[in-house]
Length: 572
Image (tube, rainbow, N blue to C red; front, side, top):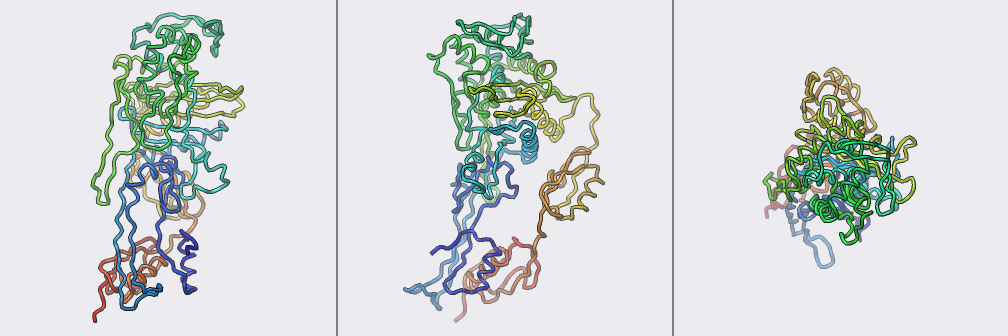
């Protein structure tokens, strides 16, 4: 009868000491996530038997699982160990390793900024941040709030689990609002239905089939570019009417809306696009500025990446490769062009227009000194009064985009504002600033700060680590409790600018050391149990009884290190 599973080492050691007849302690395996909540919605989590239940753990369970090792002990008919028999050891077969496109540092930047957004905006439904390489479709960061710790995904009340587990970035659809105007603008440019200096007039509203459709402001006379900068609904209703249902829907489908992207994480939603036959004059008007259509954040960033990269819709990818334990590539996932959506010329024009949105229009809060940032704001009122979705998408440098970032804040409760320009744009700016510095993209007109090599302060006392960080012209922030640094970000050896913040992760407990025991004459099972009880791993050679070991008896090792033991059958 199974009494308990995944008992910790300390408790198992106490039970062994009691030496109770009939109680057997067997080695088991458990997934461990050293970065805790970092990228939790990408990694997912496993169940009690280490089966993948979500994220990469679920999608690639067959590759990751491997085959556990086992020890076979001869027993008689009533289950007693036979003295003449020998334990037989079957080597475990390791699973494959899955290499992600996620950049750990960029993921840290995104989660830090999202945490700040949660404090500032207090959204009822959470928030999302996605970072992508627009040229390859590689996802460099994906973060959701609320989140969870995959080491303990069932912590807290059960009704909160599903909220925390939900990957809003791919599973939740929302009305994109004005960010979607990038699609309509790209379509009319590609179809040559508008001139850049063509004049429009916004009285603060427009009438379509007897329905009044409001703009968020009265813009008066403005040309096409100014209409994009002002995010003017009246201009975009006119543009939608010029396109007509058939052509607008041609681009809606070409940009990938209404269908899953095929990204390999489970739970992706297709979004919601009305059937063309259901689209009348009013629906055409509202669709043109991003209402009446529902998209996922992943679809939105993938579509705008095509606008930024020369017109190519890329397949979003989150896994680079699958490799075996020897580092050999078993399967590779390369960038894939789905289709050419708009021309390079239309893409180039849109990059310039979206750059002006940040420098002159509604996206000024996304401006970064020394860089040309292109972007678009979005604010949508839900079908409940006073409930909004605030978003901003931005890429940089505008002329040759290295990264694109989308932030979506769902039902903000900021007493001062609900606009994407004021809530989401500063979050994207923070992420872009950190990434551009990290990628060593040189700002124009600003002298480049001196570079510094990040020192290794792991396993140091906190006060020692602080002094070394500061003496190397760097700053630091602290995460966790305790007086010892067990990890850091950026990692040792990274080249960063002066005054870069180094995150110091503290360990509340001192790393434990153990003395290697003498295993001579022990069976495979006995040696395994003894080492496991001390927190050490075993590498087994041969079968029978222990005749040699490395390191020798009396050696001091840290918990988690490995002892190699050679076994031979007993001579008659």
